[in-house]
Length: 150
Image 1 (cartoon, helix red, strand yellow):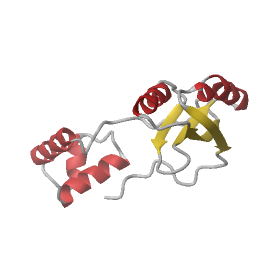
Image 2 (tube, rainbow, N blue to C red):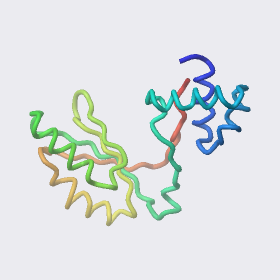
Image 3 (tube, rainbow, N blue to C red):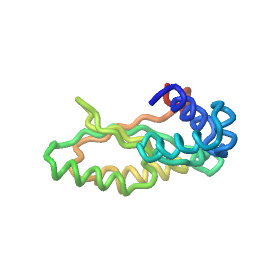
């Protein structure tokens, strides 16, 4: 990956809807080489997809919480069952396995506090292998959806 590839990636992080012609102009390449580089970046996995960024508040998802999960045990079957169950909950936007305690961090976005309580009681607390859940509410997002530093 060279500086031109990094420039292509930076431009696409800013605006994933650029046409190849617009992208080529911005990175100062002719159309064919830009297109070849773009396809190579996609094939390599450096570009994993193109997505629309939605505003959760506009869509009525105004309650956001971080849920810390401590597991009873760390055997392979329990971890796999827990991770699959978490992946099946659409309101869990991110789930990260951590070193140390707690074992997982979940980012949950949902309509409101009663809906969160229901999700917490009926789904999160019943996940396989869970010993303890601790949650904290998001007051405000300071940095979000930042492009990767290239």
